[in-house]
Image 1: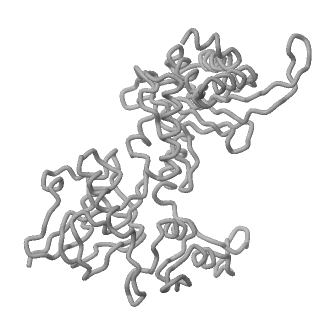
Image 2: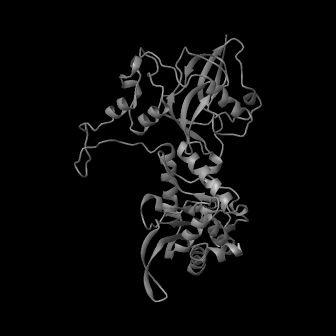
Image 3: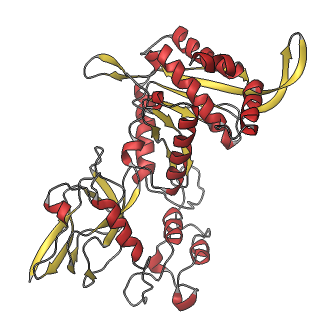
Length: 410
């Protein structure tokens, strides 16, 4: 009987490590080709790693919570003439579900979907009795060890209530030295949270940023969208603003750029990959609409909705999360009016949009109620000065205030 070692595969997009969240198998289990054996979290997403071998698990290399590097041993599988996934034999390395471009990936998902979601196992040294991926995700967020729980559901099944009960605050065993307060929880900076921390810290330490903002009368834009809606549907407000942003970047390309300190130059891009800041259960992510300059408002609306849904479901791809050239941040959905956002390094600027509210506004010498929104632009002062930043911001603001005229010129 031969034993083969499966190493953590190439994660793509420059990712070189992943945190081992949970083993999905144990030593002695029999696995099929493409059966998930571990759940890992990279800086981009939480994914399941399928085995390229069929056989019996001989060894698990690593403890849950450990950080593994690409190429490090993951599992050892013992089998007589162990089967091996064809794409691995070809050397693609793209075996993480949600990564890579192999045509075999959709087939793996279909085969996986045909099996039971998760086995309900006894607790005698085996995996915890948990079926729902929502319960597993909740346990990760609340730092609850499923192995330590006794399920109250049918057959000992661990439920959401079990996890929430276990996560309830308990008297802290240690306290903070400076404040003397009890420590409620310690949250490791790993996976996506670590990636966000590194990006934002690098942005603030490297980029000499400046912020400018303007209040904008969006009444006419809302009225235009209402008319379009009556005539068979209309793109969302964010998509309409996104189209104005893309047009503004064509006129002020300095803001659609990147500072290359190694080459000592500023790289201007010949198109726009529009990043969209999205708040999810796992944290802030910024998927990008690729080639946004080639899309109209309706095309942008379709892509924005698709990416937003994918980000919240955790299915957005690594390429979509790392290809932006300029970011649009609709923090108005959080119920706030303004923000001095942090630039998504290594981009050169980010435009924020607050909530739209009725406010007193002077029109033709009269104070009337108008729908006002605040736009804020944070930009890298190395790529341009205030005149360029102000020109871009004013272009977008004017387009929002006079959308029909703006669309006629796009």
